[in-house]
Each structure stands twice: as structure tokens, then as C-alpha cells.
Amino acid sequence: MLFKRGQIDRERISGVIIFISLFVILMTLAGVRLLNVKVTNIELIDRGLYSVITDNGPVNIGKDDILRIERTSKKTGMTSSTVELFKIYTTKGFIYLSSLDPFYKMGKELVNSVDLEGKPVWIHNFNGAGSETSFDQRQNANLKLIQPFNYTIGTSARLASVIFSILSLQYLSLAIGGLSLMILIFPLRLETPLPAQSVILQNSEYSKEEQQLDAVAK
Image (cartoon, rainbow, N blue to C red; front, side, top):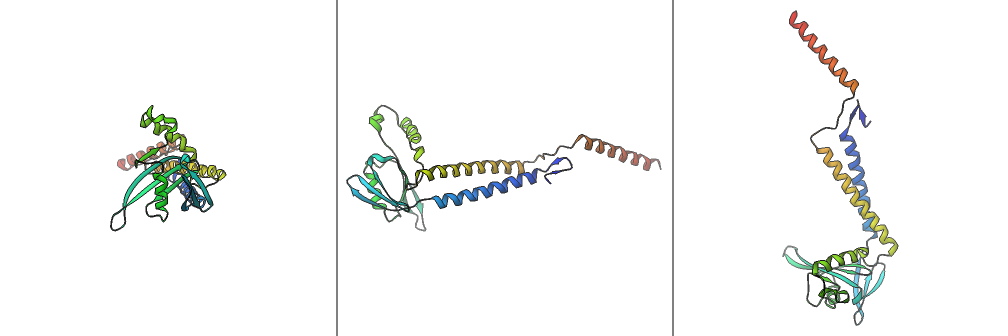
């Protein structure tokens, strides 16, 4: 029982909520993994037109389809070799690209076709707006623009909405589970005695005092 002797069993309630949150998080992770689409190759079809081969078939993209490119690097392996990473946002989803991928050369060619300067963050310059606005303004506008395409390229439009719903559920479960964990480890107990219980406690205290007085009198 969640309620025992008029007191809220905080540990049991929090434990149930944390267990449910963990179960939902595991289910959403499995769902995202099953719905994830991998890129297997990138091919050049024509000048400025590339075909991205995915598990669900090829997707053709051109220079005008590229909205944003994020370039980073990290150390990996026993030799601490540098690995170059790219995240390419397009009007048909985003592409993860690593220097360890077999199609890295063609992917790098795709990046260089629009990012001639090798910027850490490249943003599509619409109608020459870059000369009139600051980089921060362009970046904020670009982040809003790419938000609807924040899914792996090759994912169908109907599944994209499902993935967004699964991710939202995952974030909600993380928030609720974290809040329950904080309540669980908080030092104060959420236990409130009922009025009848307080009367019983007072009577028991009086009876104890009377017993002590009788013992002293004897």
C-alpha cells in the first residue's frame, strides 16, 4: 500500500515513478535505434548533384539542399589520432560523416562544394543576407530553419514525426525520473500525521509521564 498509517510513503512512490521512467527511457532508446537510418555510401551523379545511399534507398541532394554544416574533431584510439566529424543538415534530413567512414572522400567533396573556407560552422547564405546581418543573427535564424529537418536522411516524413514524439517522451521521462530521484534523496521526509494520530501520541506521552511519577512515588 502506498499509504501507511496516514503517512505518505515517499520512498515507494518515488521508486515506482523512477522505475516507470527508466522503462520508458529504455523503450524509447530501442525505438529510436530501430527507426534509425544509416548512410552506407555517397556518390557523385552530376556536377553539384550527389546521391546519398541509405538503408532505405538513395536520396539525391544538391548544393541548394545543404542548409548547415558543423565541423568538429576529436582524439580517438590508442594512438590519439584525430578524427574529423561533420554534421550536414539538408532539406531532406541530416548526414553524419566521419573521417573513418569509407565514403569520407566523397562526403568531404560534398562539404567542400559549398564550404570553401573550411569554417567550423557553415550557414547557407540566403539572398546575400550575410552582408546585412551579423553571424549570430544568421546562426539563430538558421537553427530555426533546420529544426524541421533534424532527423537522419532517408527517414520518411511520416516516421520523422514519430521519432520526434519518441524523443519528446524520452526527455519527459528523464525530467520526471530526475525529479523523483531528487525527492527520494532529499533529507526531509514527507510524512504528515493525522489529527487523530497526534491525539494518540499526546495520550501516550501523558501515560508515560504518569507511569514515571508512580514509579518515583513508590
